[in-house]
Image (cartoon, rainbow, N blue to C red; front, side):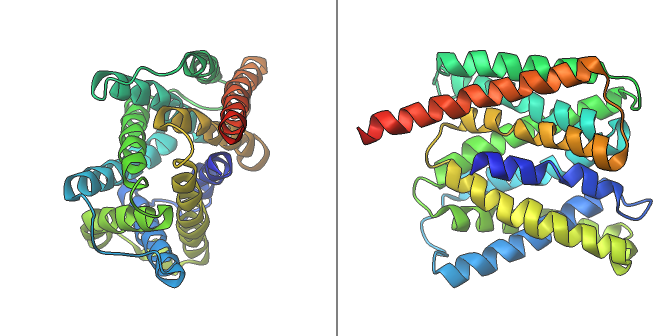
Length: 285
């Protein structure tokens, strides 16, 4: 489920390139949360999984804040550094931040397989960044991507706590709805006329319904079976997807080293998938 979610996320940066020119990062991020949160609330209500009781306020607010911060950081990184490098740096840094947070704050040392798979995946991300054929590694863009990485890691850890006592669809609905409220003022502050254009509306619906509503429901469901640090590393399928879409749809160029980085990313993800399957088999036995 987490891998499918990550692949859907990988379409976000590419989708933004098809939005009307001049769309700002905060505006499109706010609209993503608004549409995605609304879809998740409707689905949770239809499934009868929505409840207003038993939500730890501090955890919900911190998770929502993490997701709200992720949006402008991520879209700004994609705008400044390109789809491939922006996504790779943002999601590629998240496993490192996640493991560090779990280790330092929660005193939970990641398993050995996490270190190996994360090393492979992060090394693949670094190699990808050396591609200079079509994109520019902008320092501000890299900083924005790192901000997105730590925001995503924080969201994952906090969300993994919520899904222990609440249904995944309800957890995702609450977090995104609160996040949407946090960013909603920016919809009126910034120019939102791009939503009146067909391309803008199509991009908003794709990012909100598929790449947010459906994707984060799948991600939250997956968190019930894997550790947050493992989930974040599995999420590196996002930059893999984004890089491929950047090549075949956007026209970005990846050289030999970049393809080597993609293969290393895939190897890191494959290790975690195999480990998760072995763990499930051992539990069932």
